[in-house]
Image (tube, rainbow, N blue to C red; front, side, top):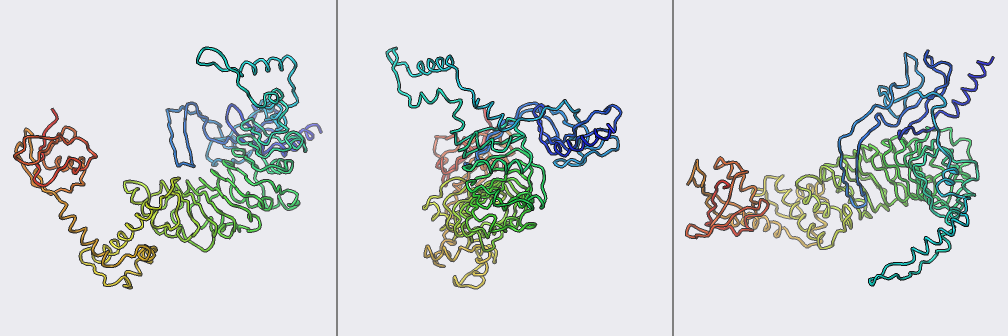
Length: 594
């Protein structure tokens, strides 16, 4: 009978405990099992089965700085020694006690911890009392000491070695700082191992006018706690729960709840980054978030959204900013469901796997899109973005199409292809620069057409209304005719640019002599025609092949002609030949560094 009662007690505790978050020696985990083990060494004790958030416990240093607003990312890594956290996957000696959720079935990411060895977290009430020392007024001795310290701090040194008193507003109020938390609109409780909210009404009594509450990186573990917080704080505007991990819920979770009672009309910004959430969980609680304006879901598992869930206009009617950065989203179709939202103005889609943007009517208020660090490799996607007529801000760095040696050319094309662009990668787009890019783009688009229809020299176009030209431009350069009209560009002008460029190329070439002063082929000479825009580094590469000389030991000098006795060193690799005034008749000498 006693054994049966123990088992019943264990089952009751298991229901309460499974899903609870813990932190042990700096590692976060989730309790997946509570009960006895079928192991001889485990005895009759109860054990906690823990799944750790990460596979390894790191010892060492990793420093990183990231500023998304400015597009700056720097990271520095040093050698790190690792120690495996966990020694099984929930199955021990053929008995499966639980299955890990956040890790794979083959990962040894789980541990058993004997009951009594695990220390649980604290409540928000206790954290408030500890951090802000609520209800602990200063003693007379403490007040006198504070007044003396404040008095001393009111004097500053002068240039003559004396002291001058300065007036500080609000000194008297600072003496009672310990009891001011009830009047605070901003409360920060990050990383305090909070796993409980506390009795109903606690937050309402302790922080009644709180508008900004930061609870990131704690041990909160279910949506009941979320609603317990939001229902008590009627002025709450922003809530950050990043780094907590909530127990999964199903469709029945909201079935017996009065949704209207769960809505906090003041809550406008909700931050749920790094919580291992997929969209199914957001979809379930969405009816209680109808007045939300900003939703941040960075570094979660929301890879499947519109392809599996209906996006309700009623649930997200006030949403202005949706941040889905780093969610392994692989297609633009996953966010198409949001195009029906009338108020949506900004989409955060950076650090995903999107390769192509496909326009569908909607997103009528969309003004800003973050698409940095994706896989976009085609200009058609940029043209599709131009169909969102309110789009003025775009982040596109670190995509295949904008990376590498031609990033400047890509930037100019983006300026030209998106009509109303005002900010690009965090920088303002100047009107003059945009006009220059657009005019250059017209010529570039025409050249692109010629190259794909017989070549620049052979292809001929009789009229800008040419059907072949029109079809190509509609498909490849949709803004071509719009820009032709804007800048009053004629076909004659485009063709003259082509002819002028060919003539200019021929006329710009300078004839020089390359003369060896090397020991193994001294006097060897080549006559070459070079572009003045050629950089020294490329000239060295040419000489390396012609004269069989190591580029690292090469020295270049030149003189204006064979009569001149003055020699000039050519020693800056990234300078163009024109910088040195190299023209027709110049002699360039190749030798070894002394």
